[in-house]
Image 1 (cartoon, helix red, strand yellow):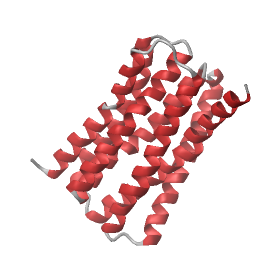
Image 2 (image 1 turned 60 degrees about the horizontal axis):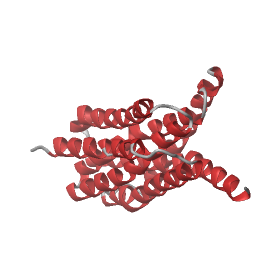
Image 3 (image 1 turned 135 degrees about the vertical axis):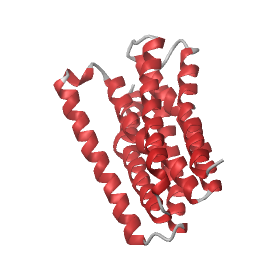
Length: 225
């Protein structure tokens, strides 16, 4: 089996783990904001861990220079700010979409697209790195699915609507994998390393800008009660 195909299958498997999170919530009757906050912190921690522990070391092993790595990290960070700014504008036009469950689903879906690229792109560099990345992403996709579904249920949406939200985020990640699968055959080692650095920048920034602050606000509010 070709390396590109193996990476694609790993990426699809990792993305599908998000639905496990929804299934766990579907079986749970009472969802609290505190539970959602902890789930989001798990998501943020997992994304930062995979970026620093797996993706960035892979770019270094591919002999990408420090300045190039820094450049693509900055581009990834800028992309998150651009997309979330657009997201805020969309939310304002639609009266902020109705509630925070939409915002969280959109934020996670935004980062899931490049996240879907990570397993397949890292597999093109090294199979072991690709496999490890896929496993870690699958493990973090479970609390990610929990975060999306739990927030939707907390907002009063049905189990089927929560599945719809979770499926959007899952499909976004799959679309990222499809993008690399279609164009990945032409990626050389340096191009792949640049892609990985971009993905790391997006994952770290979405954690620090969106997920951690949101969770902190909820936990601080709960603590004051």
